Length: 269
Image (cartoon, rainbow, N blue to C red; front, side, top):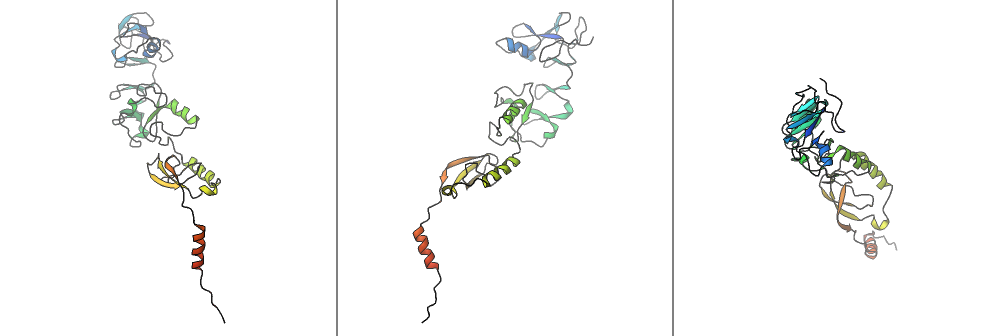
């Protein structure tokens, strides 16, 4: 028999899981965790109840009594039942991922499945997905929300990255590296600074900075709109210390020096 259209807001399935922790039946672990004061360990699930005939049985894809298919996809490790989304179980990750499998690879250093476009084309951060999302502080590795890989190698939930972008934030919350290509923004900042000269008393003022993008340390001209890294051209910089004011010019000494440098004039009798 084909799977009946029952389930919950999280999954389409025709069975309920018996929680190994409390013995209660829930459609999925997320429904359980939302109602109880503890979490269900999906890997310890041993029994399910058919939603069609209420038969309690060992976890399997097809009901032993009425032959209802509990889910188009079934994983005997994660005890995941759902409609077909091209899922596959990744052994190194230890959980099921939404595929198709051929479009993903497992990076052993990051310890995470990534799209094949990122193979040999991303910065590895060891066990990066085992950290919580730095925006919402929720789990990334087992989250049903996709992960966004930043240029620095850190991860955010895709939804958190989109929210961050909408608010105008452009830096990784962990390392402060630019979260996307800022070339056009920096060019626009160049124009703004060129059109906004600093007051006379600050025009020769410099400041030491640290670049969050290339980690260079340099001394550059001070401007309230931003200090540009002389190494990579980024304005994603942090001021390192106070303002450095140019030494004052001694006008009297300068005038005397000018007179001394004037050429001698010829005298005619």
